[in-house]
Amino acid sequence: MSLPQAQSIFTMPVLAEVGQLDFERSARILRARAGIVIGSHKQEMAARTLGLRTKSMGLNNVREYLDHLEHNPNSTEWEAFVNAFTINHTAFFREQHHFDVLADFSKDRKKPLSVWCAAASTGEEPYSIAMILRESCLQPDIGVSIYATDIDTRAIERAKEGVYSQDRVQPVPHAYLKKYFQRGTGRRSGMVRVKSSLREMIEFDTFNLLSKSWPTDRKFDAIFCRNTMIYFDKPTQTGILERFAPMLKPGGLLFAGHSENFTYLTKAFRLQGQTVYTPT
Ligand SMILES: C[S@@+](CC[C@H](N)C(=O)[O-])C[C@H]1O[C@@H](n2cnc3c(N)ncnc32)[C@H](O)[C@@H]1O
Figure 1 (cartoon, rainbow, N blue to C red):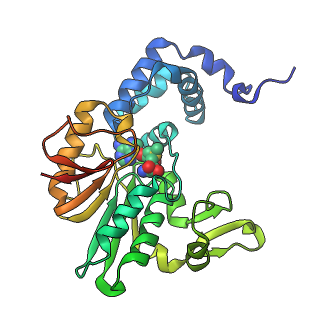
Figure 2 (cartoon, rainbow, N blue to C red):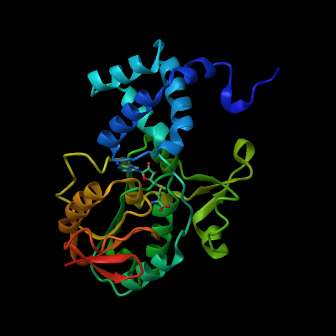
Figure 3 (cartoon, rainbow, N blue to C red):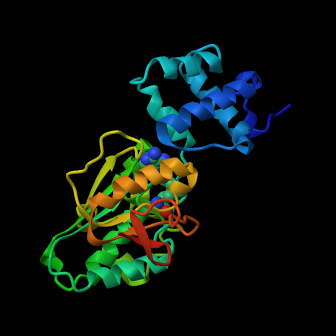
């Protein structure tokens, strides 16, 4: 008998052992570490993931795996655990209206401009920002810098590489595609890569928005933190917003995702446009 792919012969026995208490414990651990809240509808996916991680560590059951995480806050396994639960859905020029606002915001700049893309996923968002800034700054030598971070180490590695399938770059205007991407050849035929001139505008790093130590010595003209707060509870969202506010220069902009509403969470920001906020 062939088994459905999602329940391979390797995961099934461990899957059966992941009970309600283990699920709730793993959800608590994940929320404390990364802020991500997972609902009970994700229980099956979580069981599969925990089963695989347990097996890859050579442990006997999920309880031992969770014990390992809780007793070893510096274990390298934390990275794999968190990476396994992030949702990296993103796209080039996602929510186009934000890029129109950014183009308008940057077009008359005479001073250096810096943007933090705080949940950059696999890079489509910071590269979209980079293209817009390149195209809209009337004085290209003003100095544009983009800081792109994400908690997910695998996603940030892919972002740094800047290699995408043809499907992924479909939302990129044809003229930008020609100007900022090169076609892959050989092993990479059918793929495109962001040209180094654009990649070099961006500093990629891993950063957990729940971290205690923030890069508070940096100041930004704009922060993009889109479609990420939605996974956090309200107190976590408020805490992050209050840390973002002093990192924005006066008149700076915070871009939020289409279903994120920060209006009632804090007085540190006021709404400036469609899901665009400015510090009060
Ligand atoms: C749905 S994606 C959104 C990507 C992009 N901002 C966009 O709107 O297209 C959410 C991203 O948030 C990241 N993330 C989740 N928790 C995080 C945390 N605590 N710190 C930093 N990034 C986090 C995930 O790894 C994921 O790449």
